[in-house]
Length: 253
Ligand SMILES: NC(=O)c1ccc[n+]([C@@H]2O[C@H](COP(=O)([O-])OP(=O)(O)OC[C@H]3O[C@@H](n4cnc5c(N)ncnc54)[C@H](O)[C@@H]3O)[C@@H](O)[C@H]2O)c1
Image 1 (cartoon, protein in one colour):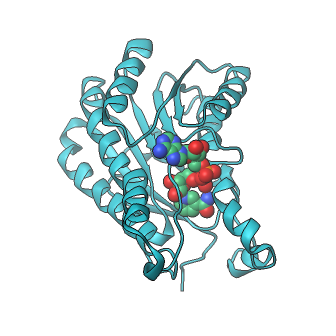
Image 2 (cartoon, rainbow, N blue to C red):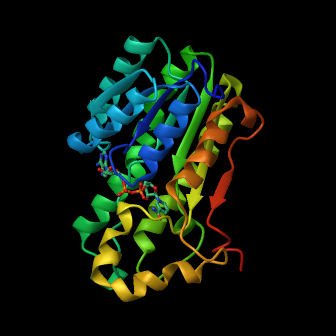
């Protein structure tokens, strides 16, 4: 109940239900964190805020497009103004533009890279000064197993997620002396709204997806949230610049 007591945590992409950001926000609230939740989806954000408040959490809710640099500064400043510090950043917001490289347009490429990679760079860059002032902290960046392996139809998404992984390592080195840890989480197949396109387009194939995982099923958002909780908390005090794969054994082979 107190693994994040008195910590201020900013989580992007918290609106989706089921979604990883919401699950992380709920898990953090259960452990005493003060929360800043953001997303482009205002209705989803409001619903998430309601759930967090019901858990007794103090919450600041802000609409944010994570590709907007100016908005990042406003979100970080508002977080510090409201709660006095910024201890944890979870760069979770993301999209999946999935199609073969031959069908990828320049616009697809720019969108995928902006939302999944540039946003993480912006978030880290804007949050770091506030975290340094707070005496240190933990950054958790959402990558993917697609950043660790080549997967047909997922190349550019994978490039963005591989970039997130390496960005973490650079930040871990540059800011170790500031007491800031930075790690990436690499989920496999987790049953959230990001799967809706494949659920709709290939319903029969989608039903079989779980069976392709050694663990025999897709993951639950809460299973990723527990990993984010560990990395955010002081229990991970010697864990930095590394990747935590949460995939039911999907990429063991
Ligand atoms: N679910 C999986 O299987 C899986 C696997 C690997 C990695 N991931 C990563 O986990 C993260 C969360 O994914 P999810 O499964 O919860 O997806 P989701 O689609 O359920 O939720 C993503 C959230 O991000 C928000 N978002 C999208 N673009 C945004 C923008 N420009 N600015 C602000 N918010 C924006 C959406 O509104 C949504 O609330 C993503 O980075 C995704 O790439 C998911």
